Structures are given as C-alpha cells and as structure tokens.
Amino acid sequence: MQRCLKFVKHLGSFGVEATVITVDAAQATYPVRDESLLAEVPASVRVIRTGTTEPFESYKKLTGRAVPYGGFANEGKPGLLQMALRFVRGNLFIPDPRRGWNRHALAAVERLLATGEQFDAVLTSSPPHSTQLIGLELQKRHGLRWLADLRDPWTDIYYYKDLHHTPLAAWLDARYERRVLTQADAVLVTSPETKRLFLAKLPDLPTPKFHVLPNGYDESDFRLPSQPPPDCLRITHTGTITELYHINRLLEAVAACASRHPDVPVRLRFVGQVSAELRRQIEGAGLLPITEFLAFVPHEESVRHLMAATVLLMAIPDVPRNFGILPGKVFEYLAANKPILCVGPAGSDADNLLQECAAGHALPYEDVGLMQETLEGLVAQWRINPNLDLPVISHERYSRQALTGRLAGIISAG
Image (cartoon, rainbow, N blue to C red):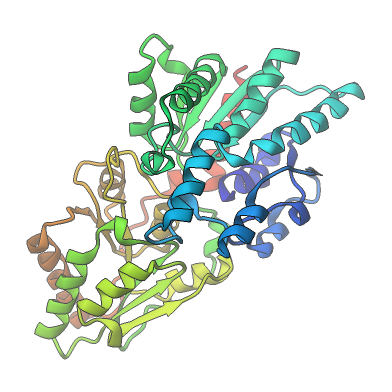
C-alpha cells in the first residue's frame, strides 16, 4: 500500500497525472488500517473508490479471528478449521480471495473510458495478484499499455505450500502468472532476485521488459531528529515478525552479551505484530525483563521509534527462495541512518543492499559466533559514544522521489 501511495504522491512532480482506483474503505476488510496516511494523497489526485465482493467477513464469523496477515503471520499453528479454510482459499479463490474486487474496478475503468477519457498506461500493483488480472483484461479490451508491478513473487511466495493447492488449482494459478508475465508491456519487481526468478521461469521473455524498482523511503517522513537513548543500547524492530524469521540464535547472543556486559543496559523493543511462539522464544532466552512490546502504531509513530533506537533489527524469513526477499522496511531503516542487525542469508539481495549502504551485513541464522562478534563491536562503540548513527549517508538513490522518477521514465518510454 505504501509503495502505491508514495508513487501517487510524487508522480505529479514528474508531469504524470494519476487516477487511482481502489476499494471503498467501508466495504473492505483488512488486518490493520493506518488512516493517517490518507493525508499524503495529493488533493490534485483523483481517487475513485468502488465496492468489492470478498469472503473475509465470513472468515471472521467462522473462526472468530482477525483477517490473516500476509503469510498467516498472525495465525500461529493452524487448527483443523484453519487448515480447511486454507484449502478452500487455495482451491476456490484463484489467484486469491480479493478477486471479487476485479469486476468493480473494471466497471469503474469502463465508465471513465465511456466519457472519452484517455490514458497513457495502466499500472496494477500486487499482491493480491488477482489485481494483475485487471490489467490483463484492460489490455485485451482496449489495448492499454500495461505495467504489472509485482511486489512479491506469485507461485513462489514462501507460504504458497500452506494453501494446499490441488494439481488443477496450482496449474491454473501458474497459468495466470505466466499470462501476466508474458503479456504485460513492462514488469516491475522489487528485487534483483525476483527478476531472476521470473526470467528463469520464462527465459524466452525479453529481459528489458523487467525493471527492478525497489521500495524506498520518503524523505519527508524523516524530518525528526535522531534521538538514540543515552542510557541504554536499544535494539528496535518494527512491523510483523514470527518464528519463521529464525532470530532465536540472535536472541541467545543478545542474552549472552547482556550477561557479559552488565554495565551496558541492552534493551529490546518490538513495535507491531509479534507471534506467540516468538514471544516464547524471547522468554526462553531470559530476555523478557529487558524487552518491550508495543502494538501496531500509525506510520508516523513507527518512524519515531526508528529515530529513538540505537540499533535496528530486521530479519529475512528462513524459507525457500528467500534470497530475493527485500522488505520495504529496510529502506526506512536505511533512512534512519543507524546500524542494522539483519538475520538472514549471506549474499542475499538484503545483504548486498546493507553492505552497499555501509549499514551492516547479513548474520546467517545459525552463525552465533558472527552474531556475538557483531554485538561485541556495537557494545564497544556504545561505551565510547551511545549515539551509533552512521557517519555517512549513502542511501539517497532509494528515496521515493528518485524511484518515482524512474517509474515516470518507464511510463513515458511507451
């Protein structure tokens, strides 16, 4: 959502006039909402909100649970009912349960075109990947130039196996994916590895149609001064995190480091969704007394927590094909200009990005020695100066303004 919002916010400065078609908030169901971001939509941008048809209210009534996060991060170990509903989702709602919105969105576009309006391009952003079928249909009906923006892999997403597709459902989903990649005029992806993944599936496609356009940070969100605490070494994580992120070895290393250096008050802060199993791991490592859990907060407050940290923690899920996972938060972490502890595979896109910006490097999931060595270095620096902010800013190319300029160039190239 933020990716689209920031594109829309900055496209006007590059001479591109955007019309946004989205879902009426009163008719949609989501795990969390951040109303504060509405203030960032420029007054000059036309936003058309439509109805939708989706099964999530029925899901909530059946299970008594909130709408699942991406990858079921807020569900924990599924029971029989959740397993059955995942099977239904994977086999009756292809590509996904949000597909019911498509006919509403297509009707809105048809009404615009019926008035004689003309558009240079249509951009569809996913997930939900059913949104890409809107672009496919508009290209077919009207020959509109179509940019397919895939923020995540499709049939290779790490939780795909949890949807329990039958062979027929998997074939149909892969067929949709193949049609989108083949027929879109341009395909936008957020990481080099995702581009490699798609091209490996369809090696006959022309490489130039694929564009790596990563997520980024909005400079206007980072006007607050950095305020690392003078009295503790605070390690902060923002967003959703579960046991899939495999930070248990890092937790052990933090506990050992805190024990070795009682004169350096190490503190952990998690802002956002933390799974029950990960909370148990934190307790098992003996870290509950120095750990703070804060619930979901609006984006502006989340940035405040970044600026109030000494060090930032991020992790890449320990799942197959995770070398291309490049979380949107990493760019905001970079904008905060603090050291980043990244638990994840060495040589991954995330690791390469952190090293490029001199903000850190990946700590492989089981490499406790490297984790301890890294923490010892941070403690030694903190003793000299509790402000560990990085001395050089080297992430400007990932500002939302700069990235939107690249998108405007792709649009105008048609």
